[in-house]
Image (cartoon, rainbow, N blue to C red; front, side, top):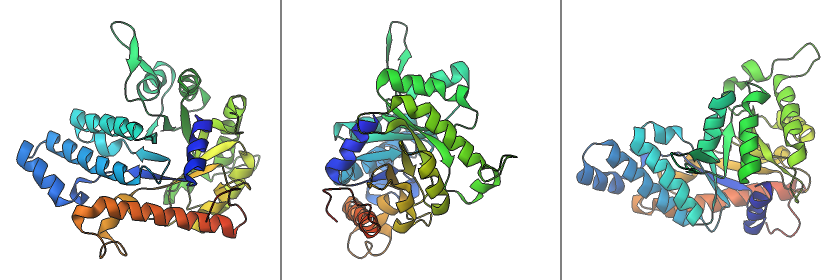
Amino acid sequence: MADKLLEEINKKQNPSVVGLDPRINQIPEFITKRNLEAYGNSFKAAANAIIEFNKLIINAISETLPAVKPQIAFYEQYGPEGVRAFKETVDYAKEKGLIVIGDAKRNDIGSTAEAYADGHLGEVKMIEGSMPSLNADLITVNGYLGSDGLMPFIEACKKHGKGIFILNKTSNPSSGELQDKKTEEGKTVYEIMAELIDKLGKDLTGQKGYSPIGAVVGATYPEQAKILRNLMPKTIFLVPGYGAQGGGAEDVVPCFNEDGYGAIVNSSRGIIFAYEKEPYKDKFKPEEFHLASRQAAIDMKKDILDALKKNGKLPEGWNA
């Protein structure tokens, strides 16, 4: 999966991903009103509005970006109908040739972790045989229960050609309350986690030199990202925190290796709700929200590539 992700990044010359985190009150009224009239004020109406919104976004950005990242919490809150919306979003994105990162942050131990891994990455046992369920290409995983909480996911990656991103140094303001704590050896918790991620992925390195066992490293902590990049040279970083959370293009540069590979940068609200904000608000009507999203995605790509070029990290053969 690492090779496939890097191939798509290289093909589109774009190391960014759009987070599909739908908020029903920010979906344009022409979509919500139509579904309200058809299904009443129901979970089905909300789910169908989300599906319609997501499909238009996917159609608009599929030729520009290599991947999308639906955050499952925004779907699960609507119960079974919301899970249906998540599944339809995953399937539609794949139909359009996009890699899907399921932002699920799952974790447990033993058989429970195995059930999560089967449901999101592998196949679930049926009355007869087995079949894929949610079927993302990669998912985010919380590794702070230790390696026995990660091995079922890693086994699913091996068996089904999938990947995971393990939480390492997260982008939220309070992440340092635990992740920055130092042990008696002088290492921070996030450094110890990085060493574990590197160890778990070493034997799975693909032809392009990277492992399908990735790390989540926030754009809001560029100094820590430098340290982590050195600790995990063969690990792909999923980089949240760009845009709405305050991280800029210069902040994501340390997440990339010197050759300009090794990271994929996420933006969610800044892309999917771009039509509500400047400079897109005055250029696109609510009915053209997907076109605003496409332009915002193009602008994000340029912003990141300009920063990589400025710092001598633009991949060979790319245009910026």
